[in-house]
Length: 222
Image 1 (tube, one colour):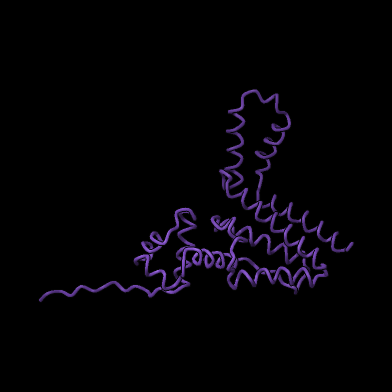
Image 2 (image 1 turned 90 degrees about the vertical axis):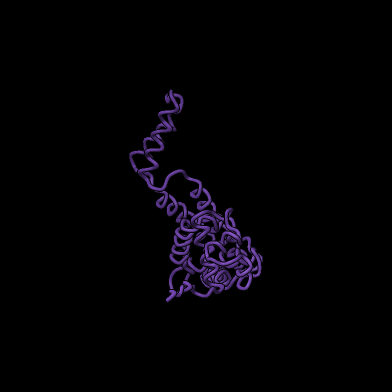
């Protein structure tokens, strides 16, 4: 008697599963290698099957960015504005470290999704209800995002992940320089980086607190 061959069960696709698969693929290989063909291969379907769930590559990117926004903690008005914005900023940095491909796309989408809109609304609500006049709230929002995204962009290109790896890299650079007597201040900096095990998370928070303190002074004098 001939054996029957069972067809492997495949979970039906929907928009959410397609978007999350695209995010995972971009996390693994980068946004440059993301294509409808490659995504279809990952999901085991022909590329045309994806268009039942996303209208275009741009629609796919809109949805992926919306997932990233959904992972960032929205600032709450239930606590002080600086604490809320500090948590929002540290959350954003952590999310962008997970999804480095998203840096540069976060504010570029012309068709924002619901998580994107909710996040921007929450930030403006927090600032306005904390007493920021409208124009100052706009400046405050822009200043914070410039710091967060700028730091994330710099961090994205760093050739190390941990303070120990950073210290090793600094030592290797110093060995290649040769005569260090010409660079006393760089030697001082390198010594600090090696001995203190320079931590980018601490550096981010130091600068963030400086930004928030400056905004608080501006709020009080407006």
